[in-house]
Length: 140
Image 1: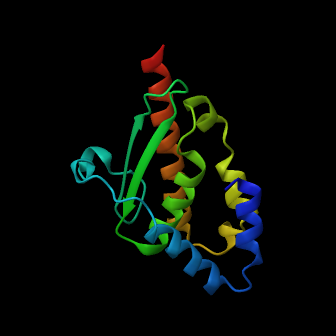
Image 2 (image 1 turned 30 degrees about the horizontal axis):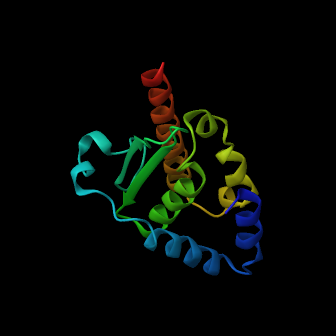
């Protein structure tokens, strides 16, 4: 799903209760997180809840990044799923050029999430971009 379609679908939900439920559903549909990456090295700093994030470069010609993530908090897991929806299976260059912060604003999440969850969202996004930068350096 592209960002515009997601924003349209999300903003059509009438109440914030429905939007939170939708985020939770997204989190519940995440691919299972690989247990070998559930360690300190893969914890995302800056999150109040525990968030694990791992990536690898797809061996295809495009060298797209694949991401896996998990959280011990339902809403945060949904926010993680949102990030993976827009960052996974993109090249490192595409990841670095994706305006996820603008998407966050368009979804009006800044007004409806706690400061801690907002900061966690941005910490996850920064970590994903760090991983994309590392992938670029490794490819050079």
